[in-house]
Length: 337
Image (cartoon, rainbow, N blue to C red; front, side, top):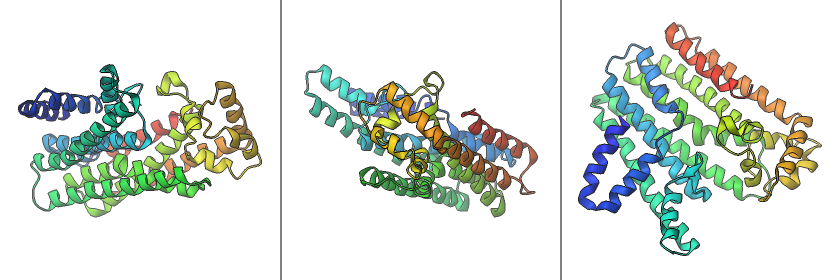
């Protein structure tokens, strides 16, 4: 569905000139790759609860994936990142075009981030338009828009918390980090797409609520595991460096727990060190294991997965859907084994 959306958008953009078409191509590139959890969750809930209008469900799934694109494009601007998944993002692509043309780095970077804001705005607006293009009407349409609205509203709150945490001198506690991660990412990645699929299928409120609870818990677990992989993962499997989070001084559950342990005095000098070496990182990893922070974070992820699985015990959730979502939860945990 996104392929069709971008094809139509690029054709429409031709009337405004070649540069506008290139912008849409860059935005399309930023939707490629990734795990596509959002449409997967919409379709799992919809089909698992007896939905048969795959065309409508595909549009709703695409809406959440386009929302994801908008949020990560803007998030990269906030973080001043110029690449994602190992390749230039929108900001990076337009920065590189400018530097190739001989424009000084500061101006080139500003151009890249400016274009990214425009691209993110387009993706954000059109995520709502895709709900309308699904053909769904009446109360169901209104409910879907409310779910999408909450997903964006919560994510903005989480992003604000993340920005504030990055600017404060102190380090947050585990609960603060979990709140940020749930709002910023888990809601729109798992919780809201599952709700949307269930609503579209005409499921009763109790089932919608049960799936939302599952999505909330498995989404938090997913983010916790991401924290672990950011330090202990294998780059060949994750596709990202295990030095980045430490160099950035990223506020994670792993680090939040470590601040309350005796080993923090060893770890602290390396958190946020921009030139952190692999040798430094090895020292930090060892201290995180000795402190018990790694094992604590792994147990916490398992705890949230257990809660997610408990939410699926509702008798009105069909067994095939329960099995599919249970497999997703186990996959989340398997990433750290």
